[in-house]
Length: 260
Image 1 (tube, rainbow, N blue to C red):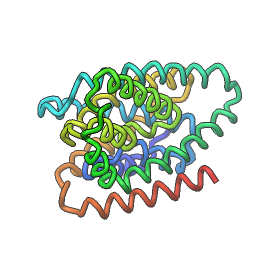
Image 2: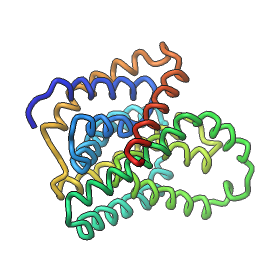
Image 3: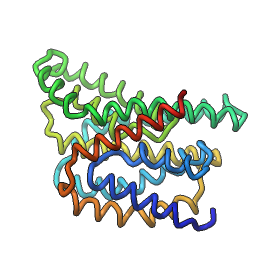
């Protein structure tokens, strides 16, 4: 793809917002790519690898701070990676028509944005609700907890592979309910660590199907890497609730338009 300064600016904007609020880049980047006229299949495939590369740096930071529960990451990956591979196989073998594939991804993307907007908007309330149920019996039964974690991984694997959305906002919210006693920094770090192998596998799978634009990926990374750094430095300067509410409303409007 030819150089487009608008794509670099888009990467800068998304990186800045992610660094400041922690809201997943996929929920912002994919709709922006659709606005630029990028086909849904290419937008999702490129955004998945974009997410994998940008979140690798986050894993290094969170690992140094000991904010990653590698056991939970492993159980999530046990469900998400096979689910991603199965979803890729279904897309590749059961949808020969590229127009039909674009339609499926666009529709799935719309619903993912609607659910993500709700998760972003009510994240704090959901966290309080989950902590009220911290004494529930199943939370202390390791076998049940592990199976539920795998089930969450399966759900995330399918949704993220189809839409490139969900690994951040949806994943963190679902983990809040399953592990309410785990500190928030560890929940976030664990979800970022899980997102890397998931988005890498899904992104490479889309690449083998021709759903990747390396030029587009490079331009997004040029903007996003400094954007994440600046956003992280300015984190806390702007009211978090204001930014999250604005983003949630924007995501809901885009999702509604894609679905209806």
